[in-house]
Image 1 (cartoon, one colour):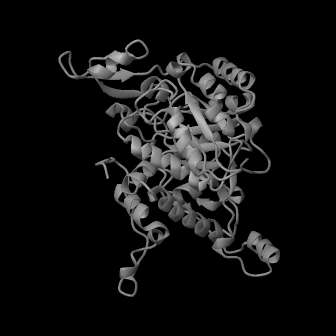
Image 2 (tube, helix red, strand yellow; image 1 turned 30 degrees about the vertical axis):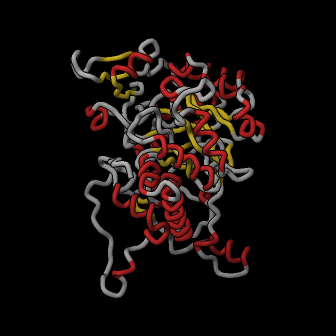
Image 3 (cartoon, helix red, strand yellow; image 1 turned 45 degrees about the horizontal axis):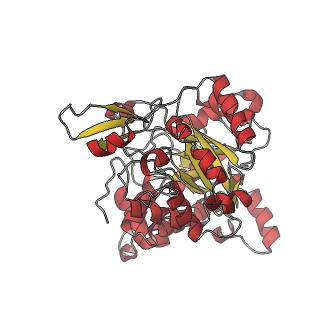
Length: 428
């Protein structure tokens, strides 16, 4: 372990899952026969956590499954495979972007990449990796480059599953990150198998409306002072400075045109768009899908970060649950991120219209606990919970979930563009 710590996140529980795997979905077996269990109060629960999963008494889809199988269905009959933004995935999960923060070490990032490949789930490479760590073809000294992460991911990736989404910010555009990846021989296995996506980063949950931020020593800052803004927030004599990325400027038309340019310039990749939890998130998501985005990621205000102002962490952006309520049920692929680490929160998100959930802080903690198998065990535990909870609703695929599976059922929001709400729910 490297001493990585989190605030406002169930670190102890995540590390336990990284050690124990599926067994951590239950109370410790040492308590069996000696302890009585029941629901516990969750005083600090957010809007999404406060929802209850509501299994019905009558389950017609269980009857359909019984007839299909010729026996009573079990939780092991739930099929978790899905399609995430045009990429086939073994689970309704993906590895979120880590950005260029140094909170996580290079070994943790590469270990998470390898295990995401092993699990057959998509992986997002965050913004500013190339400007800060290099691309990987220029003799950079770090293995943390974009190519280093792609190589680690491909090491154990099964055929036909997963894929890599590469983010690009304003500074990344100056470095022509997408051009580099699109034409690089190392990325051809992904491109030729249809498993490469580019993600336009419009914003993130931890600091809505702001660009990426990291803290650099003077030497590192001198290397990037032509690409990023540097702020002497720690004082002119301090040995460190704040590095600020541009948040980029978007209007409805700029977003629409950016997506069309992506589709035109990179016709062989999937197009993803990442939004911060803005008050107009439903309109922005609708514009992105209408313009041709294969997936829209909404990072709720609960989203993690390596560095952000205290004021934005505590007071800025809509909670993920409110974002889901405003967007409403859609036929399009909606990805969600923000404090995911266990199955019930994922099931609630899927019931409210998401196709998949991203693992960020949980993935880094799990690989910090065990670089070889921590993330794999965490996901095994989460997958067991998904199967148990989905089957408890009398359903057997993530796509079968709907708003009726949670209580209280969120009211349809006036912010949701009504003309895009499908008559029949499905999840891409």
